[in-house]
Length: 220
Image (tube, rainbow, N blue to C red; front, side, top):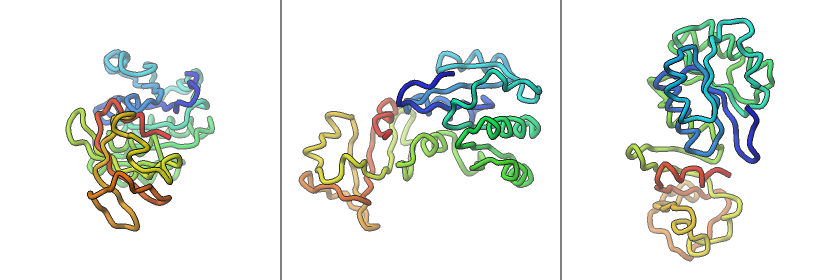
């Protein structure tokens, strides 16, 4: 899969509930997603919702030869039911030079193994929801993320470089980007009483509420 200009690209191995939620949220955020699973039904089901869907058994020796993992900004491995497949997917991503590898673990032993073979971050389904994981993957300026409903998201982000020195009136975030700023965090203090004339400073962060389809507007 060739990466489109200015868009990040991710490969996701494993299309269970967790993997699918990561894939769909990354797509909603404006990324390119290659979804991979050995189950033909899961691949067919997600195909209309991602950039590319491929049926591959990660335990096969040459399974990764044609996937183009070297083009990816990140690889997400969510195959907790098969440790061998998780290991092979992570090793293939490492060999391809993928800069960020995230893996889902089912237990402490699996976590230890995946860390040793090179996963940059380990998540567990009990602790990390797929949607929140996707938000943290796609952009470093996301500080926290809350799913208020199936459509509505509340996100805390660091203010963008181009916002510094400008105020809400000048930025027109609601009109231009459909972002409703509900709070400002400055010097560890959170306030909801934001003057529209108050310029943002470096180090500020804001809580915004927006529709899921506009999340991509927050990507730097």
